[in-house]
Length: 161
Image 1 (cartoon, rainbow, N blue to C red):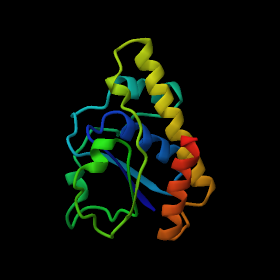
Image 2 (cartoon, rainbow, N blue to C red; image 1 turned 45 degrees about the horizontal axis):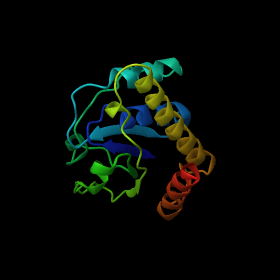
Image 3 (cartoon, rainbow, N blue to C red; image 1 turned 180 degrees about the horizontal axis):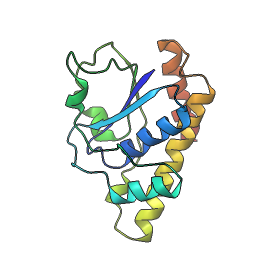
C-alpha cells in the first residue's frame, strides 16, 4: 500500500504523519507526504517531536504534491489531507484513483514559539499516532478500497470523540 499525506506547507502535520506511518507500518506500506504550497523545510518543532519519540527525521523534506503527478509518480492507494486548506483546494488527479480521507487537525506551527509550541506539536503527534494505530489495527494495509475508506473515517471519528 502506498499512502500520501497532504497539507498546505508540508512542514509539520504531514511530515509527522509520514514518519509515523513509516515507523508504525513496519515495512507493510510506503508513506509519503507533500504540500500544495510547501514551505521548503520541515518545521524544527516537528523534527524535535519526532526525535523525542525515537523517530528518525532522515529523508523527510518539505515537497510539492507535484512530485506525485505524472507517469513517473508512484501509484498512490490512499490520500489523507490533514489540514482544512489542503482539503478544500482542488487536488490533482492521482494515478490509480486512490481512496481519499480528511483528518482535519489544527496547525501547531501557528502556535507561538516556546513551551506552547512544544505542547501543540506533541498534541498533534499523539492525535496522528492514535489514528494511525487505529488504522493499522483495523487492517488498512490488506483492506480493499471501500474498507480502507471506512477504516480511515472510523479512525478520524474515534479520535474526535
